[in-house]
Image (cartoon, rainbow, N blue to C red):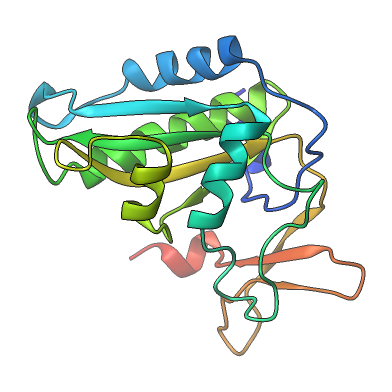
Length: 189
């Protein structure tokens, strides 16, 4: 059921790196994204699949993790993503397709949850460094998002926003990750 997928789809930042994701699984996720809406039906997004340990090691240094956790530099070895999907815009087909990138990214994440994986959408990316590392034509392709994927190795809990109104996510001493969410009543106009 869609509601169950949405409620289970959290941003995970720690994974069981030993659980690999096949290229076929990644292709199935991109195929879901391929069927989503596209501004002016431009279909300008392209996807670079990364799932080998050699290539995932090239992607990781170009990423910034969890801005709300300034004392955390990202997952340690063994807890890093098993795969990435690089969402890039083909500038020969269209530009400024940020809505398309969001729609496809969420679709991929929901598909990942259905397959027993989790992930995190990363926009804090050193784009030039990543394009160079993966031999991507940075004149033609603009990297919009990096989707980090793997078998989650952390617990993420949704909690109500407190009286202070602070929506910043946090972790407790057991490394449980908490995500404050506003209530339905608070977001309806």
